[in-house]
Every structure is written in structure tokens, then in C-alpha cells.
Length: 219
Image (cartoon, rainbow, N blue to C red; front, side):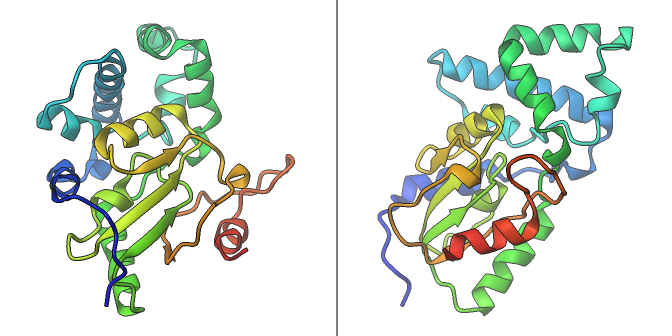
């Protein structure tokens, strides 16, 4: 039997509704820019106390980060980017823009079909629900594409502040920690860990590589 989790039906309805849109993975760079800026505007309005409509929540799901388009739109040496950078600085502040730049190498969010494939594998391995850990959740695609047949209580980590805030707004019943996974300390066990790790070889203090993200949940 699946482990019992206290997840109200309304939470599942919101999760399923949020990703009832086309996968933004195929958007052009210009379309990604526009949907990113719209999502940032929406999340800032939400942080100011305005509630989100279902349509606005779906608009948040089309935020794809800046991986692959940063050089085209965020390069301050290109005069064509002045308006984009001014808009970002106005909404995110200088620290927010710096956080966006810092995460560019890893800001490639997982396509829906890849997430669904991963959930199918977990199901075949015998996972039927329970406590799940997502070490680098982005805006929460792993959450939104989880089956309603699996009652799952998620705990997530996300280093980028904008992505973390968007994930919290889309899935308010989920615990999203705005923290690097290397600094996360669990207070409980998890039945499953499901993520698409950031691949790379970065020499400072810690190496954000596949083995680290794969092995830390087991420690």
C-alpha cells in the first residue's frame, strides 16, 4: 500500500491544473525572454500580496530560466539588452539579477516528457507515494507532473531565488527551501528522491556533479 500523506484534494487540483499547458521547452529564445519577464512580473505582484488566478499560475509555469539565452539577452555590453536588464533590475533588484547570472550554467529546466519518463521508472521500481525529496527543483516540474494516484509530500531545494519563489507560488502546499542542496539537512526520512541534477565540473568549495546529487540523499 502507498504510504499515507496529508495532502488535500485542493492541493492536487492546483498541481494538476498548473501544468495543463504546452511544454515551454520548444519556445524560441525571444519567446523565452517574454515568458520569463511575464513570470517575473507575476511573481513580484504575488509577493506584494496579490493572489494568483489559475491563468497567472499557468503563466508562471512557462518560466524557463536563462540557460542558453543569457548571452543573447543579458550581456550588458550589448546596447540591445539595456531595456531587458533595466526591467530585470527594477523587478529583481541588483542582487536578484546577480543570482540569475550565477545560476545561468544550470538554468536548463527539465522537459515534461523527461519528467514523465522518470515518474514511470519510479513507479516500475515500486514507488507508490510518500515523502519525496527534490534536490534542485527549479520551478517544480517534477511536482506538477506527479500522478494524482501517488499521494506525495514533497520537500524541495532550489538555489535560485526567483525559481524558488515561483515554485512556492505554483505549489503552495510544497516545502521549497531556497538553499543549495549541499547546505540542506533533512529532519526526516524520504521514500524517494527524484531530480534532474545540474551537470558540470565546478572547482570551488564543492563540486556540483552528478555523483554528489546522487549520493547525498543516501547519507
